[in-house]
Length: 135
Image (cartoon, rainbow, N blue to C red; front, side, top):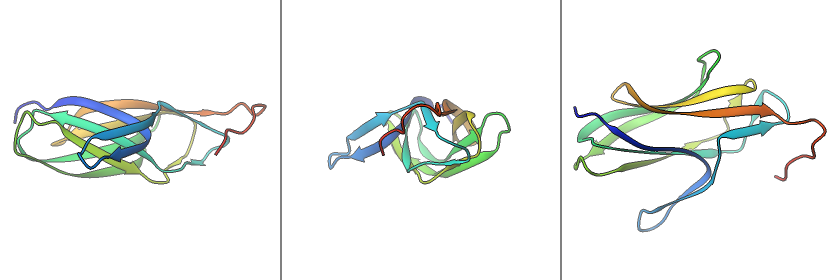
């Protein structure tokens, strides 16, 4: 298999797929600020894009606590690609994940069992004196 080329890995409040298959990626972020832990958050999305593939390849996305390597969310499936130059775009919903502690989390993206990309997501404690963020 040729080496997959990782194009993008974004964390977003929403990803909308238009009728023409264009993606609108809304509210990208690299950090969650929480009042307390464990912290449950509203659903959010991961946008991933990869190219230089042909045929069928299993993929997985894992969200892990960096300190312990505990997996707190996992998703996966099969990429079916007929043209290696095609960029395959994935929109993965992350529903109601509970973050057990503050700190660094890693989003890991694998194709064919090999990690081809990652992204850091920080979860920080809000200042108790700060006003509550709008919902």
